[in-house]
Each structure stands twice: as C-alpha cells, then as structure tokens.
Image (cartoon, rainbow, N blue to C red):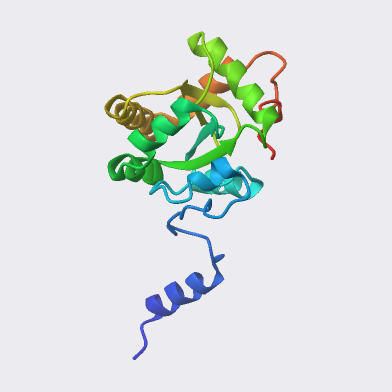
Length: 192
C-alpha cells in the first residue's frame, strides 16, 4: 500500500520552484565578459553576479550577502584571491553561511560608491578589495578590506554566528546606522 505521507512529500516537492530549498550555489563567473569577474570563475567560492535574482535568493534563504568589490588592476584584490578565495576552507565558509557576490567596480559604480562611503564611516578608510556584509534588505552591516586568510576566516565565523543568533538585532542596528538620507534600502543601491 502506498504511504500517504510519502505521496504528500512528493506532491509538495513537485510544487516547489526549481531553485527552492537547499540547492547549492555554483560559481557563475566563468567566461564572464568582465576580465576581473572572469578571473574569479575558477575560485571554489560560489560567486554570484550582482543581480535581483541574487538578492532575492538572500532574502529567501535569510542569509547575509557577502559583497566583494574590486577591479582587474587592484594588487590587493589579486592577493586576497590567491590567499583566501582560492582556499577551500574559506570557500566552504562563504558558500555555507553567505550569498557570495563578486562585483567589478567598473560595472557597478553606484554600489561601489555607496559601500566605499559606508567603509569610510565605519572603519575610517576605504579601498579595494572592499568586502561588505549586507542584509537581505540592503543595509550594510560590516566591512573589511584586505585581510590575511586566518583573520578573514575568523571574521567570517564571527559574523555568521552573530547573524545566526541575532539576525533581528543586526537588522535593527544596520537600519539605525544608515545615514539619514538612506531611509530606504535602495539608497545603498540594492537594486541592480
């Protein structure tokens, strides 16, 4: 006799969108027209492009976006790629705990400008590589520039733990920290 519970699970599974659930991310940058983004196409980090679909995925999965901005001629961007983004352990952390997004500043100048301003306000400096943690609603939470691998792994672990344990507190603090002119998430050009 056919189990009704199994039938219900199969029916619900068929009704879910193809990307629903725990479908793992894959690196989407191989062959990208941007030389900087294509350079990251072989990283074990599951880099996503800056897009509305990526933001919607972060909202659906309730994950912070890890937005890494750089450009082809940036020395420290290449160093961080070699030291961190090509390390399997760091890639596992990024892929598991965040929605990793790689951005070429030449393609998304408004996003770069907004997150550079956030970096200046938060830590007193800005530059590249700019690595920002952004809520699914579009508010930046924290930023780091070049960071050696061991320290970077520690930052990832701390932020992931805080997000897991206190997402509402982080959301509130991020909204409160937004400049007065940033009353809406769109002011941190969250819409690609």
